[in-house]
Length: 201
Image (cartoon, rainbow, N blue to C red; front, side):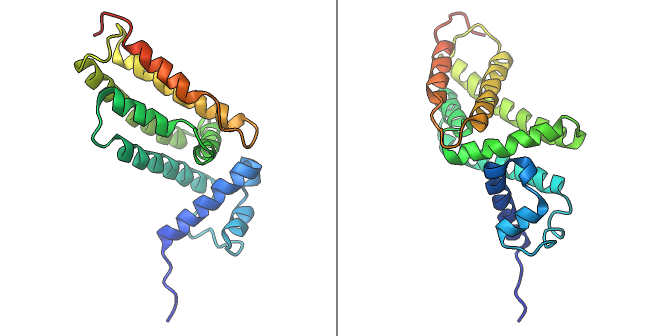
């Protein structure tokens, strides 16, 4: 009997190969030929799954985002307010080699999105989803009295998201093997400030 090919599984194999190559060689080194070789496919076998490098990169970004969201859902289950917000941020921050490699996928995608409206739209929808989750946690923390800062939740959420994205950039640009950037301590310092300023909204 002919072997049944699981197309979704093949796509994920190709995405994993793409991550490994970008982590080692950068985006320019991630040619379709190199990706096929890394995944153990024949040259040209990628086209049924990803006709172009751009479509593969877009899928890889979406997969990183979805995988991060899955981890977030697991660590925030049963939590609310600052506890949920802390858990959310710790999953996004590049605190280990796996998440640093994810940042190395995301940043080349941002570069392409600067001049590509479709990719920019994918990024914006992803960030809007994260902002909504952060604002929800902040409101829960206000309702419980844990956040008292006299700054609107929309502003606080924007600050926090920018800190998370900046941390990804710092980690992606760092020498290979470095994983300690003080990001967890910076997060704790920021969250502590939210409850020290009186007069919240």
